[in-house]
Amino acid sequence: MIERRTSTVSPLAAIGAVLCAVAIGLAAYAAHGVPDPKVQAALQSACLYAFGHGIALAALAPRARRALGQWALRLLLVGTLAFSGSIALHHLAGASSALAPAGGVAMMLAWLLWAVDTLRR
Image (tube, rainbow, N blue to C red; front, side, top):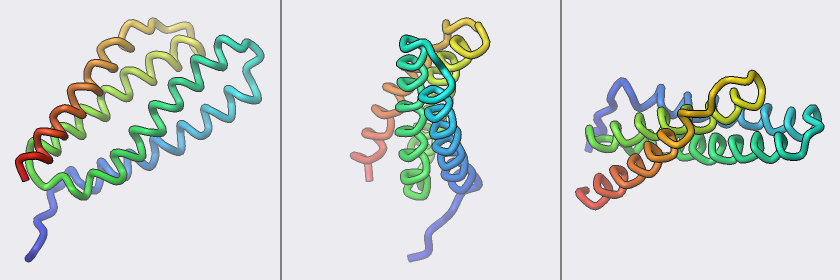
């Protein structure tokens, strides 16, 4: 059987790997460069979600052969960036963290879409 690859598979896997690298760097900065324990904890939480979902993107992207699975992973990426990015930017640059709840909902919806796509195989 010949696998059909779409143009979104490789970029999503690569973006997931980059997300993991950024999460590791941010976690190191939080642990060694941030004196406030509350800010450290918030940044570590953002890193946890970014790293975990980066791994998920890197691992699952090659399996996303159907449109629903690809959309689920795209939504997972957007949700992760909104959630983790909003928290990180809030604590590092004073930006609003208003996107964090929407990012969390997007991640939950993405996982549910992935589950539906998996059951339909």
